[in-house]
Image 1 (spheres, helix red, strand yellow):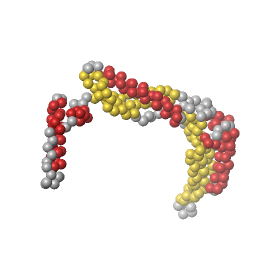
Image 2: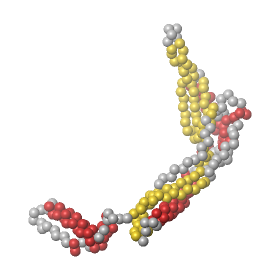
Image 3: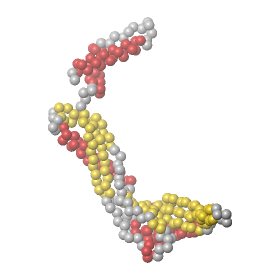
Image 4: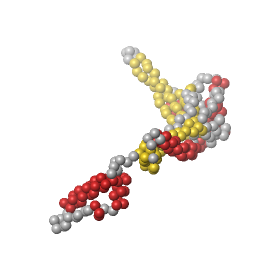
Length: 272
């Protein structure tokens, strides 16, 4: 677009704004007169650079991916107890859970790595038909469930931890997963940003070759949040009634995780 046309448009806008301002002034004020020569040339070209509708850009996305072995093991397990009264069930559950925690601590798991993730207590009902043929619900016991979350850096100890917990009273193993710690994930993601930007730049350059254009600047860069899948080996089971030999867990191994960083970049372009 001819810059003279753009200058004329901007000057016209300025005249309109100046006229609107003078309408709000008192009658004894003199109307302002603005000439094209009164506007600094640097300001005009800054406006043109910012608002020029003929601005040429190209938008591209870049991706970088890396694989890394997990450094954090998370096991969710616990104890469920059933008894005739809530107090009995709670007492039985607490004794078993304390035994589990003590055994885990003796095996080298820090108590700081063990947290309660869920606790529940609820009645159990039986349906009974009375002499009139009506069915009624009566409470015949209480179930208490206390679930622990164990998070440790002992990535190769999943089987041993489960064996220790089950042998000492745990009768639920809800989940086993391998993940990256926040610190390791952040470091890998930061290292991938430059690779993702280079990927976006290369894509833009290749797209501009047949268009006979070139990159002359960067308008914006957006770094997208990372979505990191993790290897998940769920083990949801109750061990009530099983012999101790059947409680031995199979070998549990982690797999590499992929970390991906994405960026979106808008480049300024111009003819070569």
